[in-house]
Image 1 (tube, rainbow, N blue to C red):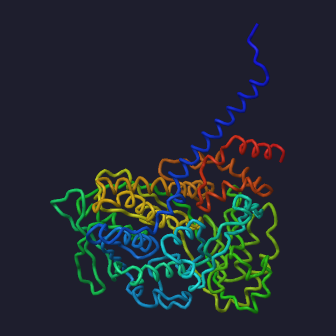
Image 2: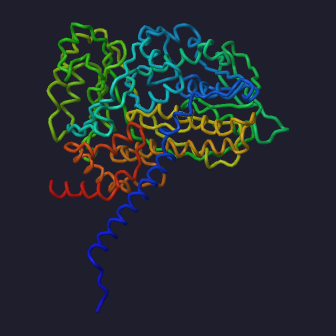
Image 3: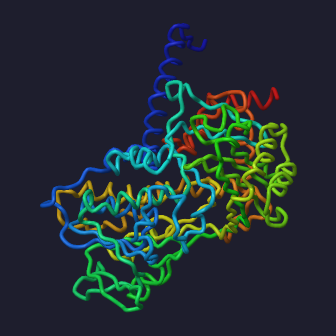
Length: 540
């Protein structure tokens, strides 16, 4: 006769296994959050060394946009002197730091999205609050609203239920600001000589590295061309490439005898979008049938994504600083001729394939914008190929060199990761410099450790873009990859999205991932979560 076990023992064993599983799962999740996100690293920002503890010499930042400004702020805490070398000279003038950014007269020649739709995540706000004391006052000065991140995420016309319970009944705050406003606000803080006396910005373009034969593991500075066309040397103990998609270091490194073949993954989503920006006067604002009113707290009105199996069009509507309303239609592949006016926007909306009709307020709002059409601005962006440069695979890099932001990776801007990606790189620098704050020299493997850490932190942003873009027929995949290999994952995510239309808990993993507040891939794979999704799929 086989052994029998009393029921209490069996129940105890099951409960014990469940308890053990819960502990192991929580530990695994905590490990993945720490490895693949920066949400736990933010608190270490804004903790400068004393002047006597700082690394002696100059840290050079090539490029003065998001990545360059964030990098300069971090490096100021650890280096004796920081110099930003930025090609666009007008950014040194008052216009480049204007609080009322929508009155800016200068035009950014190198930033395609400067006047296009932008949304930033709660993660970005939290990071900037730690980087810059009293950051909220800077936002208020520039008309940037800080309000709950209620974007109204929609898939194929269906709104997801926001998981407010997870955050104590509300949604974390974010900044509602255009690229122009947020970049200008950051520049206004970084170039404040009273707060950051050791940061200087000069007009010029870095053209190469200066090498030191006595130090085979480092560069000794960079050469740059000033606004008069003269070549100059800038000796430095650290160089950060923040030149964006110009990717200056891919030319500087081989020219100086370093890595000549840096691997890169590239795919092309064949995507484009148009941002119509309207200045909304109070009398028009009173007419717009936006739920909660035009002046409601939070500027996220709509972000509708298509089902890639049968549609390639998206639509976003956001309110940003200065009562500016951005309406952004776009899509993948052939979406028709460029959009130029209100009628084109309405035609785009009517052509979108949805399983639930778009709310009528969307059409009524767009139609009423004819009253502001005479003063609207229009920005059309043809998105270039996405890429991930694999600096982490290079064994031959200077130990005092890093690259961040769009130098390392460009993802589809529709997912709104540009600023977050740049700040993530700056946080990775800070992490390593904080660990070595008792030393006035860089750790031996600083560059290698930086690129590995940065890869881990930005991989979720890259993989999200790849996964979504691979669903579109027009996307040209990474060489050697097959788009169909991601079909199964997208099928499962579609089931998760369907459940999120009626269950806030189902939307929580997606919300944590897109807000960059510590989501992980395994959140979607918890047995209880999978069971709920599959049950909903079976029951329809």
